[in-house]
Structure formats: C-alpha cells, structure tokens
Image (cartoon, rainbow, N blue to C red):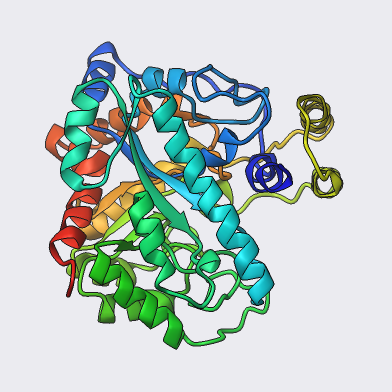
Length: 409
C-alpha cells in the first residue's frame, strides 16, 4: 500500500547512518538490572514497519540494512518491554476529502497494531490501563499501548476520538510538523502562529481527552499550545518525545520554564533521540539532494512490491556509501538533554521516548539493542535503581493512571 510505504520507510529514510557504532559499554550487573526493570518507550513509530512488504516484527532486522530499529528479537536483546505504538499521519490539507482519507488510514494503522498482537499472543499483549504493563512484562510479553501522533485524522469531529479510544488509544498529540485544525505546530513552515496555542476545536479535543482518560501529548505542538494544555487540562500532560532548549535551542525542544511548569502539574518529558533536535550539525548538501531524489521516487511508486522495496533500499545504501553522514549526534548528546531535564525537574518528571523508527537514533544508540546503555549511564550519574525505574516506566504510567482517575471530569 502506497500510504504504508510513504509514511513508514519515508521516516526511516531520513535517519542518517554511518558505519556501526561501537557497542555500548555496559557491565554484566548493569545489563542484568536493566533486564529486570519494566522498560517502556513512549513513542514507537514501528507500526509504520508493520505494513512493509516482506517485513515481520518476529524477525531480527538490521538498522544498517533495512533501517528499522525495533522488532521482537531486538526488543528482547535490548530489554525493551514495550511502550506506546504510534498511529502517525503526516499533516495534509485541511479539507473534508483529506480528513476522510487520513481517518481511514489511521484506523487501518491502528488495526495493523491490533493484528500484530492478535497474531502472536505469546509475545505481545494489548495494554489498556496503567496497571496492565507490569503483569504483561512479568509474563515475558511485550506491552502494547496505542497512541496518536498528530490528531489530524480526526478531522473536525472530536467524537471520533472515542473510536480510537475503543481501539486502545491512550495518548494523543495535537499537531505535527505544521499547524492543523487543532493546534499550532512548533515547526510550521510559516514560522508564524495560526491560533496562538490551541484552536477552539483543539480545546474541545482536550476536553474529550480528559473525559475519556486519554493523556494529552504536547510534543510537536508550540510552546503556546503547551501553555494552554497546562492551563486547561484536568489531568497531567505528557511530552512523549521532546528535548531541552537549554542544551539545543530548537523549536521542538522546551525551555526550563516550561519544564518546571510541566512538572508542577504532574507532567513528564520523555527524552527523544532524534539527532536533529539534540544539536546542530554540519550541512551535507550532496546527501540531502540524493535523499530528496530518493524520497521523490518513493512518492511516485503507487504500489510497493518486495522487489521494489529491495531496489529502493539498495539505492539508500548507495547514498550512505557515497555521502556518509560524518557529523551525527551521539549518545552523549542524548544524555546531555536527559541529565539536564533530570537536574531541572528531577527523576519524577523525566522518561524516555526515543522516536524509534521515526528518525530517532544517534551514534552509540542506533536501535533498541543499545538501550541498556541508558540505564548504565543513569546509574553512573548517581541515580538510584528506583530513580531509573521511574524514568523507564514509572513516570509515564503515573501520568496514564492520573488520566484514568480523572475520566469524566
């Protein structure tokens, strides 16, 4: 399906890769501790991979061969118990026709996640409440919560959120790379606000989230949207994959003032590993032009066959060979954001949402196999095992539980 290809591998195709980074230096004791922790990532774009021809979540893939970062074997190796699997749609025109098209796509993407669980109940389980995660992980299964990245597919009918809630969605964002009918984006090409925060329809959507028990996600939305969420939401707000402006002044990141305001209302920032948001990098115009051409070719393909996908992957690998990314963000850059957030708001308000399969990944943290390195780094920074457990899942589950408790308000 064209939509699956463009909205799946298109994101992965933006991931800058070079030769395999050195394996994380993690002691046996640290690794064993990591495997015992309940570990959840709040932003997995992996559902885009589920619809790729010939790709299986059951098989181990390679981040430097097919550019995916999450599958069942790698989750087991990296000790990732699961997380929030995103229903993502890119921003399009604000028309009835486009709304309907993206609504249908989003429903099908949600069904793909549900089908993944149904096809392998021995290894995956749907989670609907905060209390579900621990017993699922204890049974050796992967935890599957659903989330929405970009509420655009809801069109102008906020009651559609109930359909997605019934499907299993428990977290929802508002906007993505551009302004939409609900909210201003932090990265709209116009660089000008449309509403100065949430739109009137966005405020109605927030009310619907609070009534249903869906956690509001402020990632990708503007600072003014976050202000509105903190002022109006009856339950805590989550930033499912964001960073710190104090470390790198990028519109996608938040400043210390907003971090403190988020924490004061019980919210949590989940740290992303999207290199472009972690620090500035040197331009690579030849690579950018080659990638632009590849993306154009991807858009032209009405239907992706396994053979065509293999051809496009080969072209992508050739781009990596000819124009390698030589100035990539690193694991230390990722940790700089995390340690700053921990310093500002403490271990009760920081988590992890690396943006796997959506552009996340840095040198030393290439895919989920590398996750034990985060645990080791936090321990080395002086954080306790209890603190690390909060970062890995305790905080995001607390926010989810608060949304459940506040339903109907």
